[in-house]
Image 1 (spheres, one colour):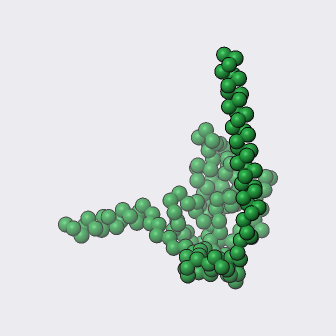
Image 2 (image 1 turned 90 degrees about the horizontal axis):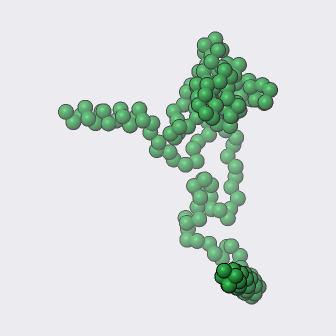
Image 3 (image 1 turned 180 degrees about the vertical axis):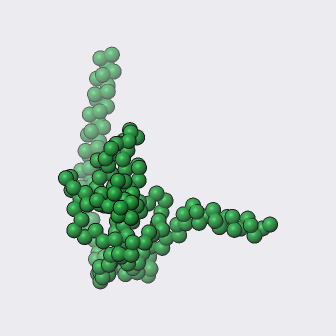
Length: 181
């Protein structure tokens, strides 16, 4: 047994020595490599360094920022952009206070007040704890609304989105099935 332990210790030490020698060898190689040429000399063929999020502007050029998007105060519900997307906020929330002690959103959206303010009530899922037990008040993990919900703006999408919700897909399938008869 002692021989096996000794052999294992020697193997570990040998591995460490070999790893260190490779690292030192790499450092020597790095030191001997000439400095890299400027980025402009390594430009990829036209169009291959374009990032869609940069609106077609090459990555080596400074982009002029878009104007700030304006908040839409239409109070109209928007379609979702992807499955399970939290609903967007259809009104301005400037100066809304959401802190540990107060949540301005709940003035209108609490289940008890929603009808009076003609606001959609907070989903029952927001009243559930992590063990799916219902609470009398909003769950602490759902308390800070703007962690998930964002204000609707007039900003144009940076990337195309072909998402269709399930109702649209089913309606298209029914229309296609109805046309086949």
